[in-house]
Image (cartoon, rainbow, N blue to C red; front, side, top):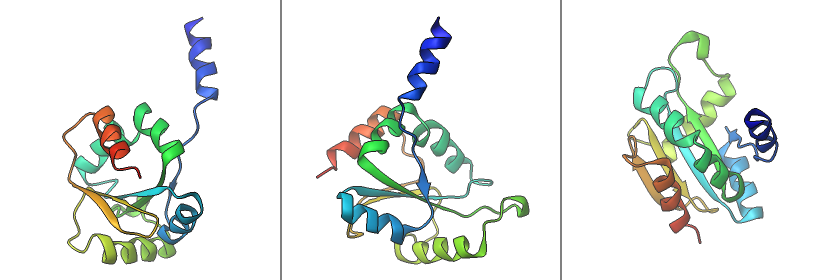
Length: 142
């Protein structure tokens, strides 16, 4: 019975998708008046990046909040050959880093408005629970 309930509950969860193109996210943000959360990550080599993704960005509370309130952009910089991105994606990530992450920090998470104005930054792993992280995001909502 519990398994059936969990399976049915999963049908009502809105999937969260991460974009790779900030310009596309910004167009959508202007149309929907949502904020954009940018996450700079080294998905296959950066321990704190992996922890951030697993503990906060893939948490149920964050995904539920993000599904209706945010547009998400991930700029990933993997090092292993098997995880290399397409050349076009690498260029998009590098150009985004030139604007928002000139020092090459990982993980580095930024909340911007629809015009690209920085509202808040998190340098490294935010030492807070997923619920507290979502609460902080909600306070920054216009």
